[in-house]
Image (cartoon, rainbow, N blue to C red; front, side, top):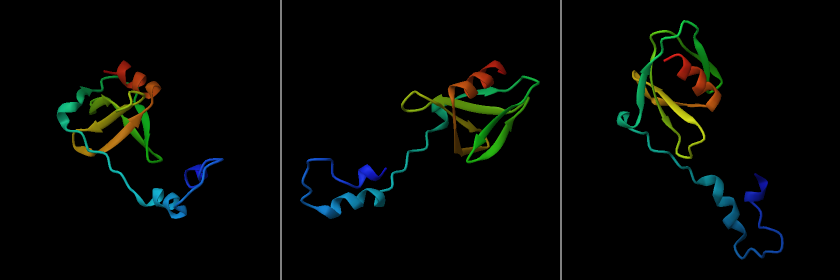
Length: 102
């Protein structure tokens, strides 16, 4: 991470302050609409536990959820119909466990 703040080897930085600006820019992703998710109901007897910001979230029988691929296609995004602004990122392994239960 420190490399973002320093010029590369062999380069001359004409504006030494320019490298400290990176930390002041904050980007926010657009929250995708409900129409961009595919919704399912979890039907398996065995619940699946995923993590959201360090806290466990249990998806058990009867839980409705929506999924879509992430923008880069490497992960799956998950939302619950009653809380569409809380977007969780699932690994492919977690997504496989959920897929087996629908």
